[in-house]
Length: 156
Picture: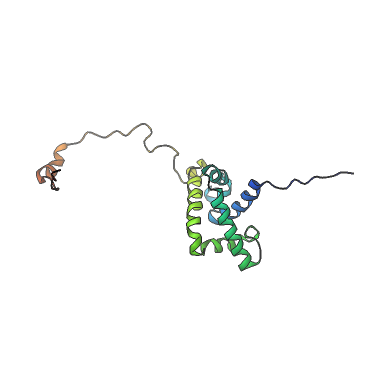
């Protein structure tokens, strides 16, 4: 006789499942363009590292309540279209929470190397070797010098 022991999911696993259902609605990804879904770029770890787990939990709890009221089921059990509809029509009191969590999602997503590559961007400084300014003709600034100052001096 085989006995299987079921270990309940940890709070982190539960939060990840719940947040993933929101992330799929926010940034579902685009296989044709090589853009991953927001669930694949480590957003949950990013939110945890920023210390914003409680805000994410509050937002998900509110989305769960809306899903239950409108559709009679949990948010993560809804089809993507229904989740997107809920997120797209958030009540005003949830907008600050969504702004904070959404900013974490955006910051994490657009730092991912796969996203940058798919968008044709590099994950480095625009001019990692410095920017060489070509020598110019300073006489081009003569009209500025001739014009004089455009401000009034104030005595202290």
